[in-house]
Length: 189
Ligand SMILES: [Zn+2]
Image (cartoon, rainbow, N blue to C red; front, side, top):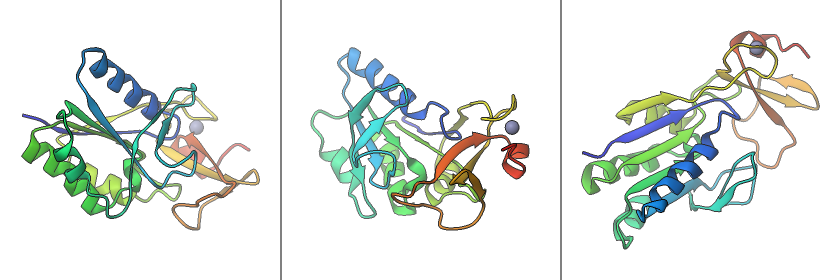
């Protein structure tokens, strides 16, 4: 039985590297995979998975109304696994299509993303992944400022922490850092 996986972590917890690694492992055994990413990605060109260590590859961009189920079900050969980056930016309908890929096509889906935004609200995509996933796993990374585990994302604008505003800023010059709860509240800047 295929399963829906959700692997979440703060910024820089190695989510994109993990996707590229999983894809490589399948493909090394001649098992094709399909890789998707949200079309809302302000770090790079649309339709690419990029990791901080420099690896990069093309992915199918998911928009609000993308027929993800149709793309996967029509794909020949049938993929052994579906990998999805930036799940936090997906909507409920996108996630329900991932559920159907698992339940109706019996193909495992591994989704990766952030859980909470810079204001510590759940992203829509993450909310529904948390509800629908069979297996949920935290990808760990260390706080930018101290030794604790990073569970939150701090937004800085011109070097100053920001706690209000739009959830997703496209093309802004804001920067995000993985931080622990204490450093999110009082960043030692
Ligand atoms: Zn900290």
